[in-house]
Length: 104
Image (cartoon, rainbow, N blue to C red; front, side, top):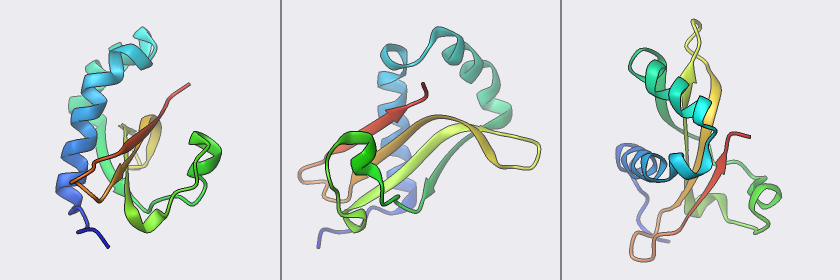
């Protein structure tokens, strides 16, 4: 079993990937919204790895082998209600793998 990424590392890696790829994968309006709102309402959170990634990416994964991080904006109740990206990162950093589901 590969060494588990700690949440801070997973969040840093996911956010870096997000920033690198957002321009090619998000609507310009969403990028503007994100940039304007992130300081006030932005959140990057590690969540429990979902079981249904195969529906999103067409590949079965072992949820134990990946960290899942969401990048988005939170509402007044501190709930992330606008998710720009869900990033799946492998715990195996020798052979890092990641998948992203972007906001449609």
